[in-house]
Length: 142
Image (cartoon, rainbow, N blue to C red; front, side, top):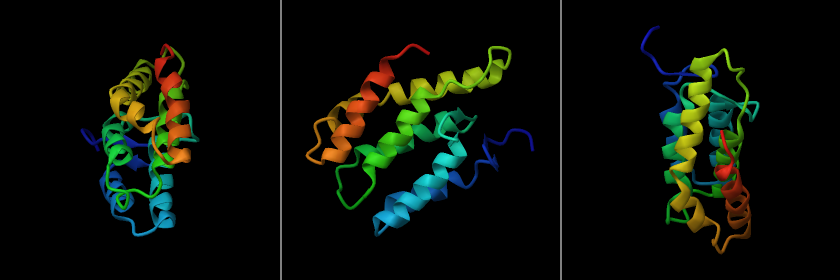
């Protein structure tokens, strides 16, 4: 199908529903399961991004930065996925379309610097530690 956003499994149509499951999960296990599937689809093997990755990052940043403690029981896991995305360096130079996906994905994560900086001072040690690991990775050259 032409004109359809693609993830590692094909059509990226399922990603919005997965993001909703993470946001509305009543428990951490449900949220983590949906987040894990998102990770498999937009950052395969934790280092291969795809066309849909850059489009998904702003929603992940919104989830991570949500002030509602019930909204996301796995903020540190979201930050770890963002770290994998911004660290992805997979495609050889001759695959320019895929290099573009990486660059767009990295830039999308960097655009969330204010959110990440705020989370680095979180009272939750797991969130603060994950944000503190993400910040230096955001500064590395692509």
